[in-house]
Image 1 (tube, helix red, strand yellow):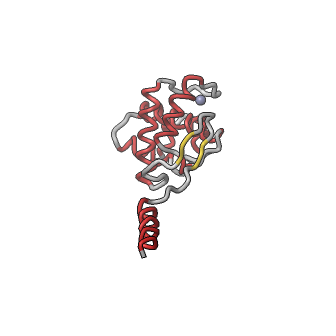
Image 2 (cartoon, rainbow, N blue to C red):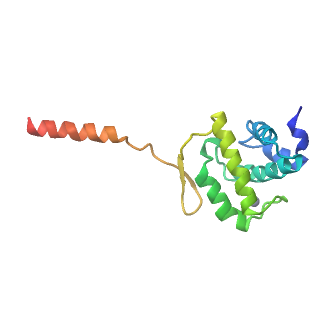
Image 3 (tube, rainbow, N blue to C red):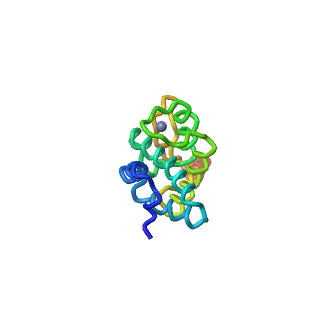
Length: 150
Ligand SMILES: [Zn+2]
């Protein structure tokens, strides 16, 4: 069965036009598989479509989706949202929808398990520099110490 049938036309348009295009079917399947009614699936998908629209406006990549980005969406965008669409605006509802999205994206391997970005106070998304591993620092320090005592 095509899970798309539960979606409103506009929701589908927002989901298919962005970074979630390859994942939203899995999201629908996940919700349906967990026994949610068509009404609930439609409502949660609507919130995810809103998030997809916002991601597109910010030129965010699929791999940048994580808890911090979702928190930013909930805390900063939702209260002053002026997106041209009718979507659920209840924080609790949207948070639930997006947390389920995180689960699905991680199950699919679309996003890493841990956070990779941070958000600048002006709202710019910044890729965190690859942190030096503890091992690297230790071996470097060890070498210096050995040289010194040799
Ligand atoms: Zn919005």
